[in-house]
Image (cartoon, rainbow, N blue to C red; front, side, top):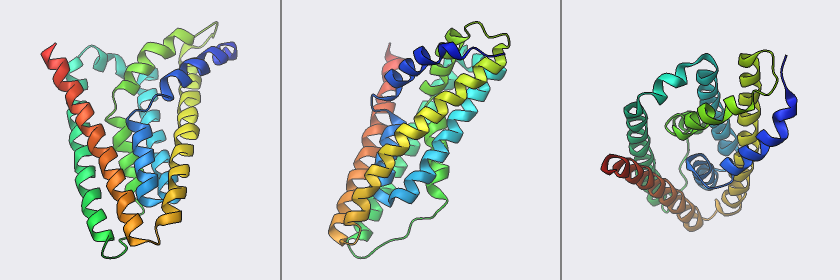
Length: 210
């Protein structure tokens, strides 16, 4: 039914796509530093959910509609940039409060934020659209083959970026008892969010100017 012989080549392509820092990796780094390992695990499940939605869209053909209307992708990017800049503001505000005492983080936020960060990164959708069909191989069922490739891709990112988030959470666990260190970690996380938001906004602006 499916052709698993394409997996070695597919995995190589996935690693080439995932290793360079992008929105998902930056978010995992930031949430690990800001909130610790538990939040990082919740966040990567959110990112995995967002990726699964995009993968499912490609399998059922919805993604082709978005590909044919680039303005929709730009709208998603603008929303994503705005959301990341808001995260930067909230994180820096929390950093100031942390200097005066510890602040709690809602348990549900990392997962929901992970979903939004993933869904506002349309490059994932474009990757699925461009790459998954190239690895149909000799599969007798194209939809099932695409679904398998989507699952492999999602699991690969969850493991890789989840590890990044957990390792960042180690620093949070080590320094969270110090008000000053905790504030610094939040400022670093805020800078990551802000830098990423500005980068996405600049990418959209460059697209309009082209």
